Length: 325
Image (tube, rainbow, N blue to C red; front, side, top):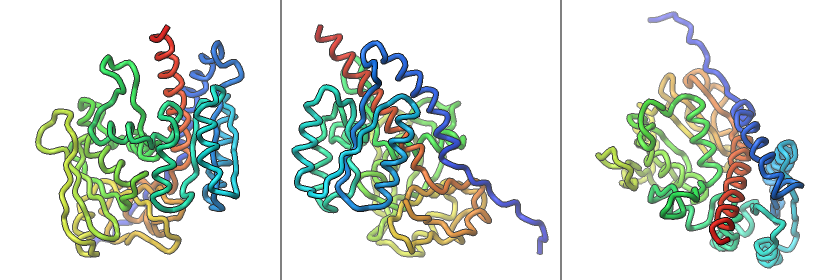
């Protein structure tokens, strides 16, 4: 029996990764001074009493203002007032970006609210046009490829975290940089889990998407060309099936919105990378006995991607104006 002491894995904080994007955002804001002297305006709509949403709003405000972006939180006790106020912000030329803190109603009505936000101001990338582009691996909004499509900010943040952790292979061409990697995503929400599985599969990974009902396998097929991912049902959820898909996973990503959920540490392959995007800690304290790198929260990278998305939308709007003139 070996007596070697295993070196514990390292914790990587989201704040370390988000700093990389701060300078990029700050200098982009500086270049906008000629057209938006006071800095672009991001408006957040909050109509729930979720402490995690309140915290996210405070982080967003602090980060925005530190980078020269104005931030305004509009809070509503009456959820039914939200729709008309979002429409007002859509039509307000002084508002550059709009975001909503979900859940609001906690049902299909939330999906409706996502679609009310003008795609030109949707910093979260939740508009159906952006989703369709993501799922079909389309990276531009126009045929001339001058207007970049944007990606939902939490899935994009996780991609950027994986790039930072050197899981993406920059020696391979775009769209293939996750080739040969196996990922497990414990969450299949329409806002994060499913688009994230599609993004990673479109970049060449084999992705096992896990929810309470079943486990699905997302792949891009045999071809190395840029094509849409494919989905295969592996069967109803069971601990046995979860253990099986995790045994050789390079990356395990969790996003279970439950305080008492803990991913079984024994299912983590030695040396795997573990990332949690839930506002609750989905991994137990002993995660680093198995994981080589552990990212406990992703919020600050998500905010950086949100602001980056907003600046891209401002850029797109200015290009369209230029074309129109």
